[in-house]
Length: 156
Image (cartoon, rainbow, N blue to C red; front, side, top):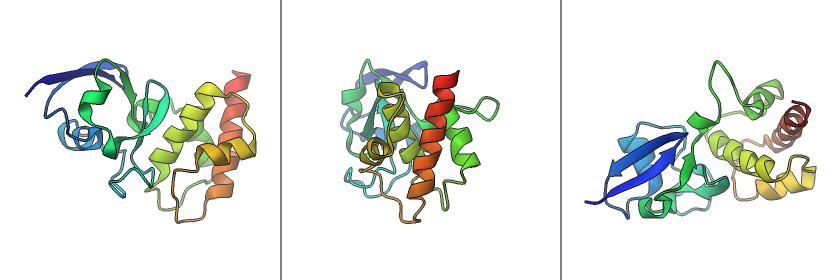
């Protein structure tokens, strides 16, 4: 099998796998990064969202070959316990989660939004999260958390 090289959470990575393997499978099974979740497997729920060169993508239906020579960021690369990302701090402060299954995908979609728009409106946030399903009903708190994170990021 050919090796596929890409930058994962800031680190050059090389994977020996079938290039048609879904990125999510490689992340979870081969690399042990379990923050991105398997939801529908069809790119419809957003639980598997990661950043590919700063754009939110569904990793469950993204073949490994398509990330070659690109940058992939997972929730594990967004922040750390020692230095959480402003989104992570804001979601905690706003209590914007319940079960947490969708949360990593939602945070990655929000991170992509904040990379291209540092001062989004509530409507823009809702549009950015449109492809992320959450059954717990935390949407209003999530929007508040993203607005809070955006304000913190602009202030720093």
